[in-house]
Length: 154
Image 1 (cartoon, one colour):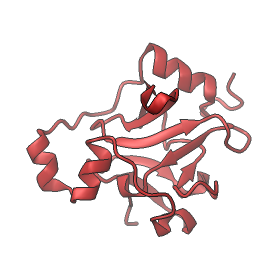
Image 2 (cartoon, helix red, strand yellow):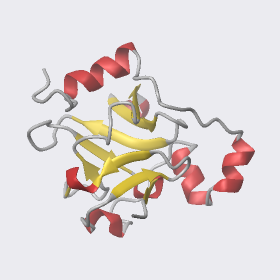
Image 3 (tube, one colour):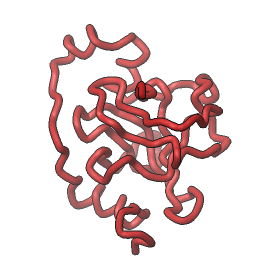
Image 4 (cartoon, helix red, strand yellow):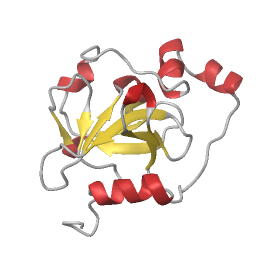
């Protein structure tokens, strides 16, 4: 049950993952070659091939200045720094997406685990995963690859 009308909780995440995601405001669909030419090799590996960057490899984990983070692939705003927190996991962590339709969810059963993958709802870029062990009030921890994000200019 939601604690706030605009706040997602674990039940919402599971509902989206199992029964369909919110409709995105727009779609950005490019060929693999177009993505390869637009991204660095590491950005492509993580976002298009569902890779993971090494834990603690980005200074973004410890940066908490105000601002918004967008998808490195398509520029869609995804997260606000006001809901960013230090999770100690080695990846930037957030409690909520910027809006319900920004992120899509898929059950991920790779590596013998059952997790919920987060992807950009505009371009299907792999972002990371979401877990139900975050701080109150949502209880969510969006564990996101820093290479999948870019801080938006004011």
